[in-house]
Image 1: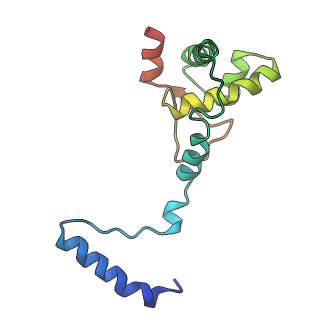
Image 2: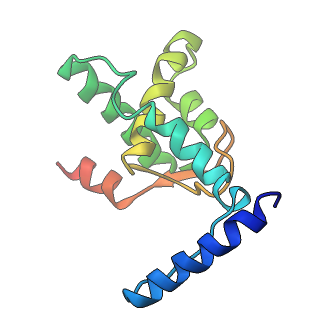
Image 3: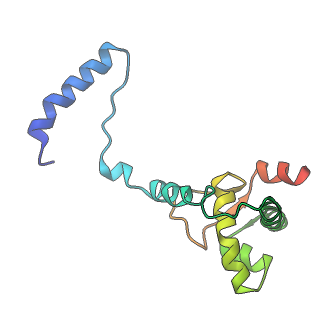
Length: 134
C-alpha cells in the first residue's frame, strides 16, 4: 500500500478510539469489497421498481406467471425459467426484468456470492410459497 506510512498512525488512532468506546475496528480492503456480491446487489438495485410498468394489473399478472412457473420447476435457471414460461423471444425479453425484480425482493432464491447470470441456479423461497397461498 503506497500510502501506508501516512495511514498507519491514523489507523492506530481509529483502533484506539474504537476500543475506548467498546467498538470493534476492522480494516476492509478493495479486494474484500469488490466481490460478485457487490456487483450483483448493484445490478439488482436497478430492478427494484425502475424498469417495471405502473399498471397494477400487469404487475400482478407478470409476478404470478413468474412465481407460478418457478413453483412448478422448484430449482432452475433464469434462462430455463423463461423457456418454461414462453417460447416467444419478445415476451421472454419483457419477462427478464420481472425475474430480477422478484429475485431482488427475495421471491426467488439465488447465491449472490457467485456472479449472477442467465444460467445461475435459482429456486423458490418461502415468500414464493406464501405468495401462491394468497
